[in-house]
Image 1: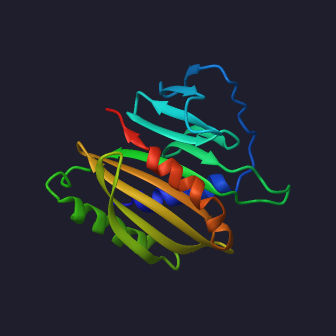
Image 2: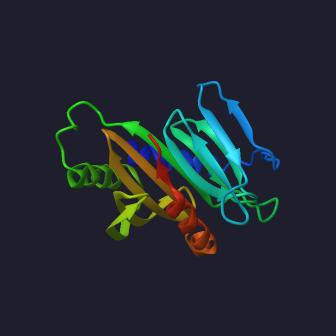
Length: 201
C-alpha cells in the first residue's frame, strides 16, 4: 500500500509550485468542485482561522485565514499552503489531507498492522526516510498515530508530521510538510489545525 508515499509526494509537488492564492471573504461561501465536493467556509473558528468542511469526505478542520487553499488536487482532499516569504520561496510550509478507503484485503488488519504497512512502504519509496518519533494519540475523539519524519526530495531536506486515523474502513492522513530548517515556524499553527480536525460522517 503506497498511500503514505503518495500523499507526501502530492504535498511536495504542491509546495514547489507557486499558484494564485484564494481570497476568502467574511461571508459564508458554498461551492461545488468538479468532483462534486461540497465545502463550506465560515469565519467561526479561533481568531485568525477559517473552517473548511467537506460533506463529501466527512471532514472538518480549522485553517489560518492567510493560508491559501486548494481542493481535490491529485490525491489530496484539500491542501493548505502558508504565505510565501519572498518571490524566491519555492517550497512553502503546507498541510494536506488524504481520505481513502482501505484496499481489498486490508479490512481484517488491525490499526497497528495498517500503520506499520504504511511506514514500511514509505521506507521503500521515500529517499532518506527516517522516523524521528511515533506515538499513539487521540484526534477528534479517534485513536491516531502521530509520526514525525525526515526525508529528502531533490535538493531539499524535509521534515513532516503526519497524523494517521483509521475509521469505518477509511484512512485519514493529515500531513504537515516543511523544509527541515523552517519546520518549527508554523508548528503551533499546525497543532491548532490538527486539534480541530474532525471526522463528521
